[in-house]
Image (tube, rainbow, N blue to C red; front, side, top):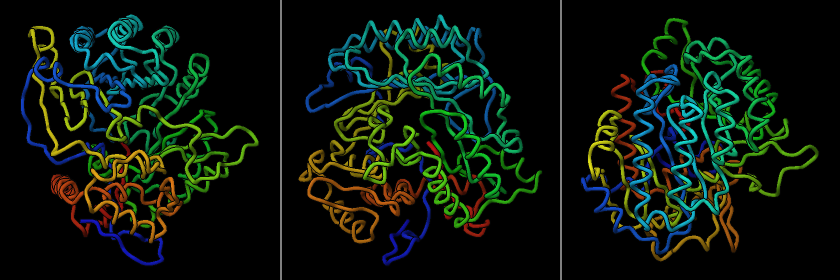
Length: 476
């Protein structure tokens, strides 16, 4: 249990919570198995404001040691990737049969993984064609494609652009050779810089992910990483404190072999505060919980702590309001529609076999107690830094939530006016904890159990250099 600490202090909570790719609501996790047809033929669009699509590509040229997402080894041209593409196209066509899914225009699309750039140019076009044939893209504003720089080339970029991609992200993670080796990042720095130039020729936006707070990382090394990252010239940068509880054993073995010790909670928090000041001085402003937007030359930051000039539109459907829905494709793809959370088969082999051989595919279904009307309070407010009061059906949210908002205002983590709540600079430091704090107690207990399980499986205790949960944040 993580507790709010009252009083005028920087230390607003007694622990620092890792941010996970957690689903909300977490209650109602008892699973039912139904067919595609039985579920999607009955889903409606009443009360839905917008939808986004997610496509999971579970292949990587190399496996990074900080990542535990659903992925396996695979390179462009592998037969296993071609078989998976055929299954993915089949799923697109299957879902395209239901007006409940296709009648509402799609606002954002995201290709994640894994490494979507392991697809060939022809496969990218084939999947893109299926999407255009089966969904209404007349209001599409953002189409994001994740890449790894070793697997991109001119032909793939042209194919991405041809299907509508306007934003590319890649995993830089760090420019420090010590940590690149520990992370098993095998691209050269020259390839990283060349990729940025390539993306700039094809797409409106380029962004990359970076990780900080690794074992033994000094402020000097951190400063060098930030300065080089800023020099890449991209429109946005996403910077995440590393997660020790969901990284892989080889990374911790590598730390030990190099004699690198975990950083204390206060050291990592100081890094986060330092990062904010460094990025501001470099001409950036926050645009979500962990992302920074490069401001035009000479432009001063906006009136609020978090910029509203640019947001990741796809993330407005994951860190979202109850009426912004997500439809997932591919193995481990997740859809969130009203009170339903739909999970595709996590196993790639069985997903492919069932999709290609069976006439109607079984899916796992979790049903919450009700539509999560408070989702915008729990997720959108901390992550994007503001919440329009008119977006919340206040008579439908748990009674404990308005009281918690009042406490956060009293602790100077939020400010409130007639129209909205806004996160302060102090609140931004603790934005992940605010997500936890604003969640109903039933969801908090599920997260507590998850953290405890991960600690046990990693063999960590409160005495292990205060590793967990006193220092650990994670990027999503």
